[in-house]
Length: 444
Image (cartoon, rainbow, N blue to C red; front, side):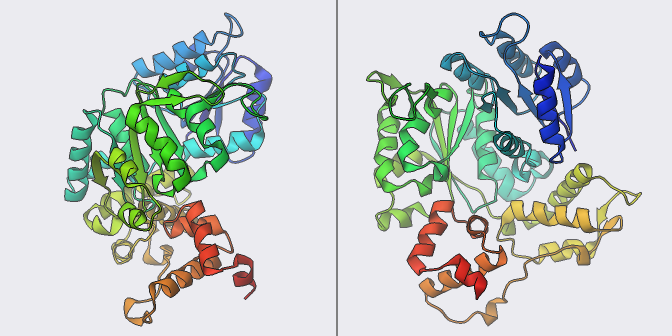
């Protein structure tokens, strides 16, 4: 497993983070100063960096942390960086994000928050970003990347469409990296995860004292992404009541921080993504057409995995190597897939797309006892053959699929929704619509 590098001059902080990470299966390295970390990074790769911002010079400016982020960029070392510090100034947080930091955790941290952040940024990259060069000769994929490269050179807003798990967020990151904004921040926000009452605070920021729980200034995502790229994931799940607030800043570039009367301007490029049929949502009165027009200057469609069968040998080999490196190889020989195993993969419909393929290969690597992964090692959700499906109304078919998914995931509604390609808010809306009780379905 590729380690997490902890850079902090306080040995107690390093030890605390190491204990938390190692007790949950992560490897870790420690450096007391950015100079020490630079030497380590030139010798080996790491999955993530946890970076303190202040070291020997002083305790508040953050200059050493910012200089280290600049060095990473100049050295072309591409690794996610999470800043761990008690921020003295909001401006410092913005500078760190613009220099490439992807998130920040305030000290003293909560262990669960630290773990969730580490898991998020060390999660295996989906094949669309990590292995696109190895199978760029595939028609569907190569055309997509050619289009993305052309679009990246412009400042046009981009809407990425595709099923859950097919690599939309990785394509958004690719566009940013190939753009003239790559020296600035790529900021991602999951629109489905923002509570309605915190929408403006999350996107535009707030001032200390703006409302009851506003105990400190908060930097909004638009400010963090200044001169860079703001990625609005799951844009189709944004409630209608909030769409007008987003539309205004997309139309005029203007917004106000909550609790501040000064109008600010944003220069962030907007890339958004959804698995929702926005035309259908517009017809149903759930999405604003004028907002769609602001988002979809250019539309890119990521094909589902079942439409990319020519990529399967390289994709399967990619995940086999990745997960073997991650989990170790105690078979004594190089691992490989048999022809029968590959045939089994090719015959499956892949409703979960590349994300599901990664999970299937990972499970086979962990449980397979021999160097060769056989068809018996490949566990798939076989489903119901098409010819055996009864004739149902769309309402009833949807209800049955939701119930089946909830049972399969032992009542985990969010996991069931992700498998079906639905956001958290969307799956709960459908539970209410069909009067489905997860507990009752499990008990039944």
